[in-house]
Length: 134
Image (cartoon, rainbow, N blue to C red; front, top):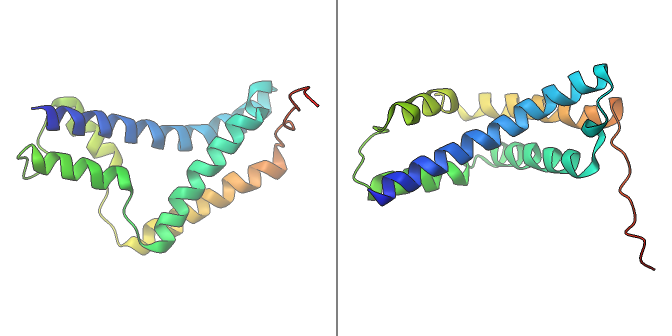
């Protein structure tokens, strides 16, 4: 039971990461149009850029996301042969996992990553502020 709960928690974390990366770009673009200053926060923008960079790198290296690997291992320890689970788990998995050749994901992730990188030029983040110590 604990392994299944841990796998479900990891799935929720994984969906949260995907939502941060996808919704982050949408919010940056919409926020620029509406003049939201928080979208120029350099910490948010660096975290967003690093998040998609990791995904693109994994895709180009042909690696499966570590969160997916850990979740599958936990489900295996829980005795789940498939992704059986709760209603929420079922739908989170439906949103997150697709079957396609790896090259399709590499292209999609790369194009999305290019959009995120381009957003740094279209909608520049504020510079990092020095801490004031000398």
